[in-house]
Structures are given as C-alpha cells and as structure tokens.
Amino acid sequence: MKIIKIGGHIIDDANALTDFLNHFAKLKGPKLLVHGGGKLATQLAEQMNIPVKMNEGRRITDQVTLDIITMVYAGKINKNIVAQLQANNCNAIGFSGADGNTIVSEKRPNKPFDYGFAGDIKKVNTKTLKLLLDNNIIPVFCAITHNEKGQLLNTNADTIASELAIGFAKHLKTELYFCFEKNGVLHHISEANSVVKIITSKIYKTLVANGTISEGMLPKLNNCFHAINHNVSKVCIGKPNMLFEKHSLFTTIKK
Amino acid sequence: MKIIKIGGHIIDDANALTDFLNHFAKLKGPKLLVHGGGKLATQLAEQMNIPVKMNEGRRITDQVTLDIITMVYAGKINKNIVAQLQANNCNAIGFSGADGNTIVSEKRPNKPFDYGFAGDIKKVNTKTLKLLLDNNIIPVFCAITHNEKGQLLNTNADTIASELAIGFAKHLKTELYFCFEKNGVLHHISEANSVVKIITSKIYKTLVANGTISEGMLPKLNNCFHAINHNVSKVCIGKPNMLFEKHSLFTTIKK
View 1 (cartoon, chains in turn green, brown):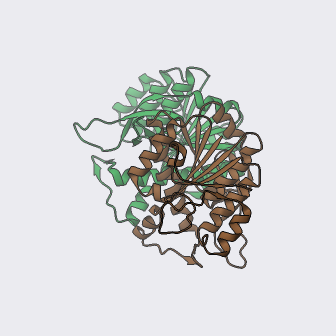
View 2 (view 1 turned 45 degrees about the vertical axis):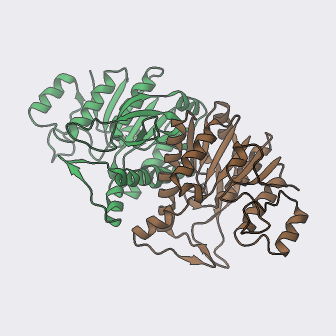
View 3 (view 1 turned 90 degrees about the horizontal axis):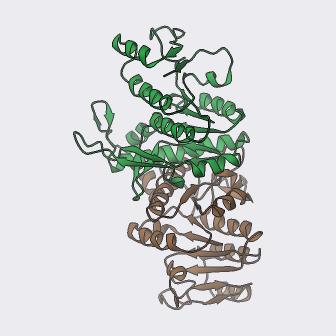
C-alpha cells in the first residue's frame, strides 16, 4: 500500500500536475493520493476581496475561509484531479474526511490562540477505503476533515497523509511518500543534489540543532517520524520521480 | 432503491436543508441523493465580479463559470451535505460523475449555440454505487459530470437523477422523487393544494396544450417520463414531505 502526498507547488503548475497524474495512474498495487491546496485558495480570497488572516505565520480559518478552502480543495482541485485520473484509466474517487466518515478531527482548542475551523485528527477509518481499494478504486484526499457533528475542518495535508498511512499500517504493509519541489532534505539549501539520504531520529536532532532542518520542514519531519514510529514500513521525502525512476535522489526516514 | 433529487430552494434555506437531511438520514433501504446548486454559484460569481452569461434564459458555462460551479456544487454544498448526513449517522460519500467514473457525458454540440462546458449524459455506471449501497454507504451527487478525457461538464441535476434512476432500474426496483418547493404540478399556480395527482402522457399533452405545464416544468416532466418509460417503477414530484409523511399531496407520473 502506497500513500502519496503531493504539495501545493505541483497543484499550481498544470503541466507538472498532469505529468505526475500520468505516472501515478500507472503505479502498480494499492495506492492513495493526498493533495495540498497550493495558491488557489489565497487567489480566490483575493478575488473575493476577503483578507487572509494570519497569526505567527499560520492561517486563521474563519467561516468564510473555511468555505473558500472547501470550494477550492474539495471542489476545483479534487474534482479536476479525479477527472484527469479517470482519463488515464485510473478509477479514482475524491474524498474529504467527511466522505465515508474516513477522517474524524476536533477543532483545535481556542487557547492560547483561536485558529478557527482548524481540525486535529482524532480517528481514521480505513474500512471503506479498503473496500474500494479491493475493487481497484483509488481514493484521492483533499485536506478537509469533519468532527462527526456536521462541522468541516481545515486540516494539514501532511498530517492527513501520515495518519492515513498509520491507519493502513495496522492491516497492510504501508509506504508513505511526501512529494515536494526538492530532491529531499538538503544539507545545503542552494545545492539541489546535497540530499541527506537517510535521517534517523539521532541524525534529525543533529540537523535541527545545526539549522539544516528548520521552519516548514520541522512539522513535515515530525509527521514522517510519527508514521515510521507507528508501523509505517517506509517513509520518504523527495520529488515525485522518487516513485517512478530508479536511481533518483530522495531522503528516507528511519527510526 | 430510492433516488431523491432536491432543488436549489432547499439548498438556499439552511433550516429547510437541515430538516430534509435529518429525515433523509432516517429513510429505510437503499437510497441516493442528487442535489441542485441554488443561488450560491451566482452569488460567488457576483462576489468575484464575473458576469453571468446567458442565452435564451440558459446559463453559458465558460471556463471560469465551470470552475465556480465545481467549487460551489462539488465543494461547498456537497461536502456540507455529506458532513450533516454523517452527523445523522448516515454514512454518505459525495460524488460528481467523475468520481468512480459514474456518469459520463459529452459536451453539448457547438451549434446552433455554444453553451460551453455543458454536458449531455452518455452513460451511467452503477457498479461502484451498488458496491457502496450494499455496504450501507449512501452516494450524494452534485450536478457535475465528466467526458472520460479529463474534462468536467456542467449537467442538469434533474437529468442526473433520472439517468441514475434508469441505470439502477436495470437491476433493482427503483423509485424517483423530485423534491421542490410546491406540492406537485398545480392546476392553478396560485392555489398550493390544486395538485394534479396523476399525470399520464395523455394528460401531460392536455396540460401542456392548455398552459398548465410550461417553462421550467417542461424539462422536469420530460425527465419524469423518460424515467417512467425506462423501467423506473415510480416517479413523483412534490415537497420533501411526500417521502416522510402519509397523506401528503404530490404528483405521480404514470405511462
């Protein structure tokens, strides 16, 4: 079982997305795609003259922002990905966490700061997803969950991918791939091929201490270690070609 | 098997929608929901300063309009309905026709007039839907289809409901219910209870000739007759209470 997460940079580049989906469709065996949102939600908010509210670099999801995210992530992006996969003979079905009650979250506590309709995952239900996969149907997840009380919640796409991987790992050998715009975790940000090939928790501490890993990479790496520490058999970070080409450079996370 | 279509007026009224979904969740047996779009797409287009293009009273679906419809119908409306059904212990999954390749359409011909990305249905695939229904999972359809070549298409929700009903009728006893804001087809538009209880094709011709049925009701009735003439066992038009209350008024279509 392969869980593959693609980031916003692929979503924002139509040719890169099409190329990725062509390859993804051909990938053998059970697989599941999780996609981020890219810049489209921010662009729509601008077009609607709705200011993006932030606190310490993180988006605050008020009601109108939640509507925008739901429209862009679950509507425009998700359905266009599904239609493109169908064109490649990959029988995809789009999911939010509300669909099939697959991902249950709860609103992040109001204190110390209220981030609005941001959801932290409580539970993943893989039963319906396995039923579909057994019938050669491929789930495609956007980064929206629900609280089982009728409320949709905005949830980090990396976290969705790692929690789904952990859920599947209870029943199946599961691999998790985080695709982004770099070849992996880099020793030197300016050198594209300076990939740290293996990161253990010991190496991780050193890389954080010396500043190699910082900011946005910290939560990504935390999601990686969360997965590898909960029976996910393989966790990798790199460009999508790590999935499709031999001898490509990428980072593997080990315990 | 019950196929139920709800119109835009329920979507536009949050209380009416919640009330309907509470009842729908409790309905026994296999069921499927199709929802229209209401005024939300037009409102979003206004907020984005995008003019709605019409020809002879029909919307022209250019690329930006298709994006808006996909965001509003498949995103905001569909996911909020699914989340509300989950809150009522109804295990729903949202669908467009692209999801599971369930509804294949083709772009309406450019001549005599190009309505843009409007799709006419070619094929309905019920296999995946039956797999889900057999596992007590309820499909919820928005009015978007695809052409199997990666293109999403805007498709009439009444037509989606009748084509799905015809598809299911090949395998199961299937009933089709069109819910809207009136008690059914009315003899006199100003008298809410002047319901035409039964419409046969003979009565239909008379009602069209004398002007009782006109404009928007014509395509709706055509969808009804299309279904009843293709093995759908029961076709009704009325308020949602026709499904939930005994002795309610509604119109039944007969051959």
